[in-house]
Image (cartoon, rainbow, N blue to C red):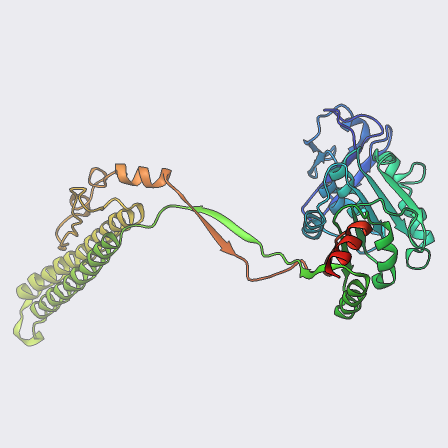
Length: 423
């Protein structure tokens, strides 16, 4: 359908991918430019690049990806002349109608050509699509891409798709007893059921699909299908529920989690006991340094002042040592808890130092005391599990799909012989 060359050439149609919501087609024309919010690009710079290249802008505002067109990308990038069919509906319709290579298909309601491009790729050059569009102005637009070449011709579909301006509900189709399946995307599909029955082959089982946005249309279509002799009538609604897939490390054993919680609780209790001891020592020092003014002379006052000064310095030093010691101990505990180093059977036991005001913090925790990652931890990092998180939002509804099957009647001579035998 499109160019199969590995590199971009003048006159090729490419897909410019800027963001997930901003995808557009571009006809490569030497001398022209592309301007967007992601920068400024010259068509000449794109010529000769491999498809799928990432191209930076000339003014440094961003980059784009230049992709080879596919029916899926064309559905995302095509100019919307009407409401279009999207990938979920297209895939389901193609599967249920049993469209395959070499199939001959009728499409009533060309619209923007999204479905036409998808089934043209499916049937290949050995099949054929008979596409009908009633809206005269829309039919003219569907036949042309840009202003100088036809859309289907530019995409290499002129031998696969036959586009006809025709009111199929009133005038019927241009073929009879020829196609394998019929797809009707019309405001009143029930008016085209009898014409579709004439166009379907009579030597094998064939299928039909009607694309209707309203339930009232579905009810009238089902009644028309029953009256025309179609069987296996079913109706579907295609919805999408996205799943977010992530990789995470495997969960730790419950016994290990319980053990860590116990160590955390023990650490909090020991910290509380240290605070109680420090507060008791502080009260004793305050009581010892408190002497009545009438009971001291000049020498005693001098000695008491020195004692008070020494006690204050000792108290400040003790507070600093306590804070530094608790910080070092907490840092070691958090490190071991986050890295998961304290595993059962590792041979290491978590110990929290009992800090005293006179103990320097460097004697409590050193860098050599902090262990590195264990073999079990390294193995758990390399072994990751896939988790799927379902989105609560369901989207994708466009219309209802009504399917039916037309089973060929047995030969008349065979029917007569059965009737004679029964009589």
